[in-house]
Length: 182
Image 1 (spheres, one colour):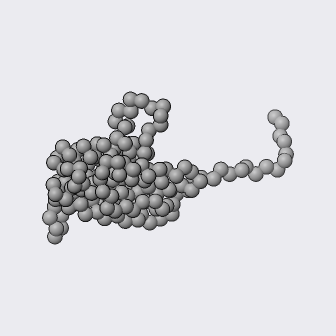
Image 2: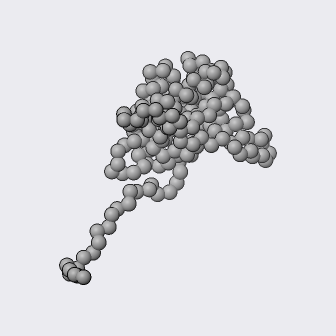
Image 3: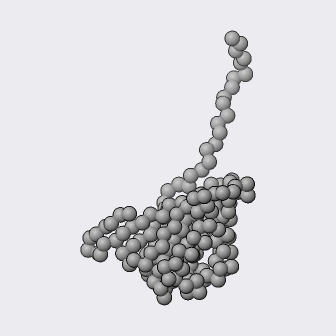
């Protein structure tokens, strides 16, 4: 947790890592994360002035996994339920919650479209839960840096500049056709 000051009031920055979520009503708190193919759902209840953010890696765990423990929070279904339930515990009401979705980039060409799968899952979850999706910045090939002021619901999303990492290409060794016996 970082506290910064200047001419503005003290700001408490909380970084939300993969598999984590944070909920707050403190006007001095800013939740922040960096996303590639992961999704962050930012929820805000404007009546209760409570907001939160999660950061999940994949929509669902492999079917062969059971007893995930803390790893469960890395998957969309668990991450979304934890975020919604924690907001309700603090006084938010599902019917007045508003959602923003970010991330879901397809960072590596030629690989499974994990970002697209994550985005689709999150949109379907919100629809099934009756939570209005008011803003979405998902897809593409760039990472995003995200800041949420949970008490106000204000979100700032910026594209992270730089080259998209590519899967390494295996080099074929050069051969001359000679055989050496030893």
